[in-house]
Length: 207
Image (cartoon, rainbow, N blue to C red; front, side):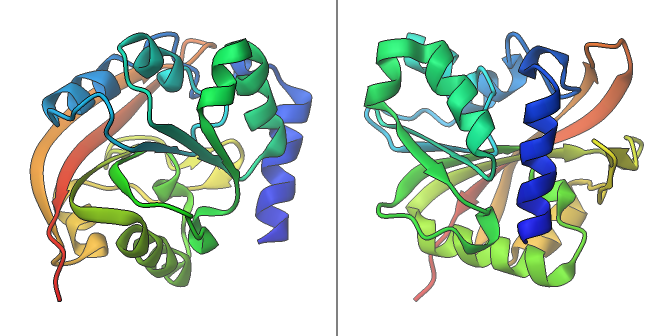
């Protein structure tokens, strides 16, 4: 786990967020799926692995005020805080590995673009789901974006696991019902195309 954190700290130490392959000036599909979730503006939203992502900026501009960011990299979080300026004080920031994250509060929407597909170890994936189950409010929604089956096999020098809706649903388990799926071809800052699959789920808490 320390190796995982060390890897991502070095990534953000050596490159500007604008140079990283996952950079999006406007995360249009994520915003569309969040809009489709029909949340109230005070809904608790967490962006997992969202350290330097601009999603939080767009959500803040749209009036959402109960926002949280989780990232394993301190440097990624610092980039975002500096970019947001005074607005950063209204956002909850968590520096942690998602597989052992213990949140002080529950969330109505969990957004993850390109974290889950890095978990190549089955044990890590199970711990991710355990984090989901203890972090979500009943009836919450989950948006997970991963490389699609025809997407890259590696990212940032690391192997990943490709998913379609069925494969992802099997990992999450029976508590999650698929509501929506969409495809996106993301073009990296260097011009490479990456096929992503986005999936929105409803969390059905069981006793």
